[in-house]
Length: 87
Length: 333
Image (cartoon, rainbow over all chains, first blue to last red; front, side, top):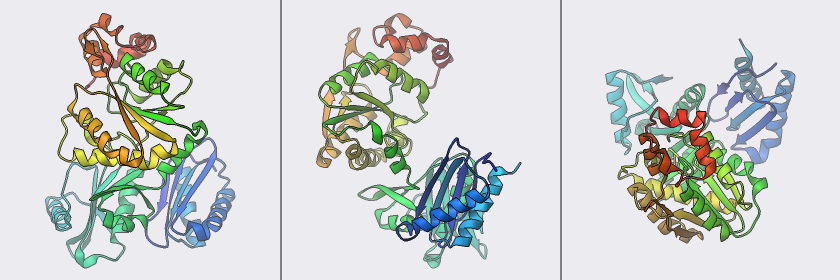
């Protein structure tokens, strides 16, 4: 799938994350997290996995995380992808 | 649930809550939202452009997630409207609460702290990393609306005294000439100077965020604090990254706000290890050259005099079909 338009999902609450997607020429992922030092690598791996699963190869992906668990990351990112690719 | 505050009663409650928190209720805003509990407003916040303000939570409801909910809503809606970065002004004591929400502290001065949602400043600085050579570098921040021989003189004088000169062109779109046109005039007007690098200020210097009154001109009481914040951000975060040791500025005989900004520069920057050098303005036709003078002459159609005040590259642009479209319709400033 391709990111066709700007989309956002998630919240700023603790144990959640905000996902921002925008169309772009290359894939550019930035992750900010209150637990970046401890879990930055794992968050990145999860994000890459979900992007790959949906065949997202280009776009601006911005994540601001407040300690979300794996399934929350997946759910929020998938929601944003659906919103960015629909219609 | 966060809802929009629209009715007269909503606004009355919003004002009371904001004022009870020691803040001022200051319209205008693009968005005002809050959370009600049993008909009583317990959290409120507003967004004006990129700035979040009037964020307050009732004393009885602090320590929960209400602030997070309000900020989420304001940021989410703002993003849908095309705003891609967000700032908040608060007191230094409250800054950590915002840092927990992934805001990053940009600068704190006395009673005011400026935070940014996300790490835009770091990405902005990283964008230019390759163009920076360590050394005795200098900087100019200018709007160049349009680029004149006065700017050119200032740039030449400054460039002669440093290893590399960074010329930051104000990104903000509040001037007669759009940013793209100003940037191009500056690039063409300085392309022969090998040690001059032209870049944009983004939101981090002389912008509607760091220094809104610059664009109002007449100034206001809040202006002084804003100027200091703008200069501290430059001195603490931007200048070290570019190895800037000197900030150059033209003397300001006309505009009160700019003169006050120059004065603040002498006060704020030297303690941060940055020398300020004010360079006397170049004159043409018996008066100092200024961009505002060029704009006035354009609007009056006095094209002959302009050739003495701007470089050929700027004149070419002003007389091109693209340039004429900008000034012939009569811009606001």
